[in-house]
Image (cartoon, rainbow, N blue to C red):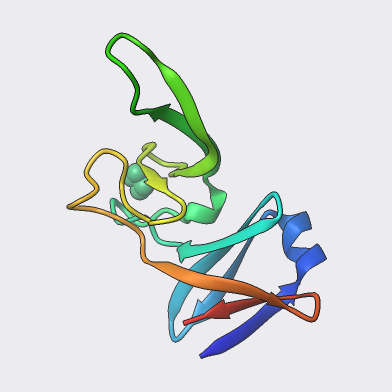
Length: 116
Ligand code: FES
């Protein structure tokens, strides 16, 4: 199913728009030129992920080296700080146990289209 959730300009301006998809809340998030969509419900205790924050994280590097990367591709829950990879939805701490469902997002005729 394809859902037009608003214009590209509107969603960019808001940063995140929550839409209802068959009773589930999905957050469509604008980052630079891209859009991502994830379940808006944190798997820990249900906070709205759209009210969280975007940042990066330390990425794999040589021993004793700390390299910051993935800027604005890590979504942090506003309640207790669980962090998720915006592209895969997986938890950074426990990727095999926890995560957010992700959805494909495209653009058509100046609109943001969510694919469910
Ligand atoms: S509700 Fe998201 S980390 Fe607790």
